Picture 1 (tube, rainbow, N blue to C red):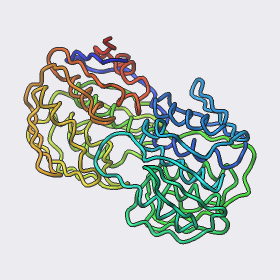
Picture 2 (picture 1 turned 135 degrees about the horizontal axis):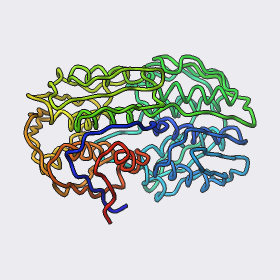
Picture 3 (picture 1 turned 180 degrees about the horizontal axis):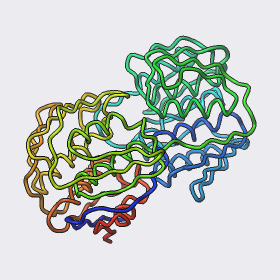
Length: 417
């Protein structure tokens, strides 16, 4: 897909089903190599990041397939322990394979990962955790060489509740001898989901989704089946779409409890959100109120991944909205593109002030990263005229059929070649 086209002014209505969680399926795919058997993952989204993970698995010698939302991985034939630079650059979260390969093979060679350029996301937390578990790590020509003939359980105190470092440590600990205690662990629902998959493999895990996680390794089962949780960030994006365009939609297949921080902010703006089982009924009129200052924080705080799309919907508020970004220093890369559409946004360091209620107009804009690209889509829904969004590869990393879904809800959206 070379670009996306959105003509604003259409209210949204109808219902869609929310995809499986991108940030959940990627570490589970990595962990699937532990057992040396077969894993079946259902509710797996069709995303470029998922295909990149499957390509890494194939590079390692595994059989990896994805069809109709079901990913199947057979790692019994795994022979490799290195990930080349080309594959590492395709997604930032490729570093999640570090702990899995190390646990399975006793050594791993990989280059520094790629992905969205959101500022420094050092992997030192990952590396120090591997060292606590017994790995010896050296750097050579831009490659990281990690060796650990036998990982051993240990106490791992994370300096920051990093999602990726928590996941990598859990996966490596599943292949270690003894018990590993992870403190200051990330609490995101995706951590809990990884813990459930590891349990399906036969690993003893407790506390996943809390700040203290305990993992006792193998033996593994030869077969595991797991259903990925719903993608809370995708759900937040569609809520933002309704807030921006107006309308009434139903989001099916969600976990409302994972969206509390997001739902609370949108309700404060005047967006109606009602839970009915695994469905959210979302409605919004033309006038929205600015929320109180939105500060991004680790879960259960407001997620940094939902900040850009919320900001785009706040362009429809009567008054000023204030954002404070505490996770990624370059999370405002979408702001210059929103300004091209007429947005009044001022950024000072980690603080952004959005003055809403001013008309937006269609423009040619470039997606700077995954969530920033989604923010441009949200703004375009309310803009006068047609917007064209280029650099859509970023959007495809995390959203399954987002243009088709918006069109199904009544947006004038399509692909422009």
